[in-house]
Image (cartoon, rainbow, N blue to C red; front, side, top):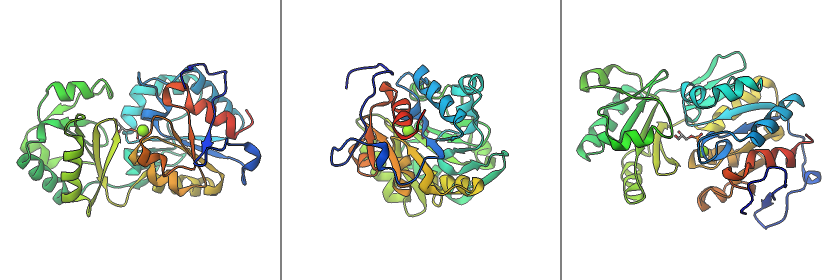
Length: 296
Ligand code: G3H
Ligand code: MG
């Protein structure tokens, strides 16, 4: 697919290569959960005009629109807050930090899962031993932290334009952490992913969420836990939910609902987990998916 036009409808196919048809839907769509990076945002980390207009049209039709992201709320706010406000959409309710923080429509935290102190320190000591501390960003609910500023962290700040507070061991002991993000590259990603999965995957989620980043977050949290809670709070069945996402942190929610779409830019591992595969994030996938599943 090379087109970047929003008005030419691009195909959404199932795993047998059959085109999606609305008439095959068993239940109408009442709520739409969308991932941010690699999904709603294009490679320039922006929401396209087509995606934004379609979200607005869906909202005007009474469809609930919910962001489900690995980012914290303050990061989503800084990257898409303006667009959301000018189209009358809302970042609340929402699934943040991979579901570790999930807000209902009144802004109440219906899921709130931190990384406990003991585990935080274990990750720290292991990372120190492996010389990985300089590549880590630690996430609290209000801000990000790192132990130094360097080119790797600066490069990550082109994705998430939040400047981490530089901390030392003493300060680190006192902060409440929800997510650990490790910034890697094509050469070391697989090695480091294996290293952390071997060491920690029995007590914390370890996932390659986006590009060459690894995220770790509470064992019992994932975006699907957020999807279920938000659906429950609206009294909507998950059969009426539509989910779209591109990363390893989307797998549970893609598998958990009957109607899920991943993008052509997703990895093969993620493509295995979704019911349908749509266009890429640079081809306005959200816009095409909304038009395919809902009468806009
Ligand atoms: O920076 C990467 C994000 O934490 C992953 O975000 O879940 O919206 O793709 P996403
Ligand atoms: Mg993503």
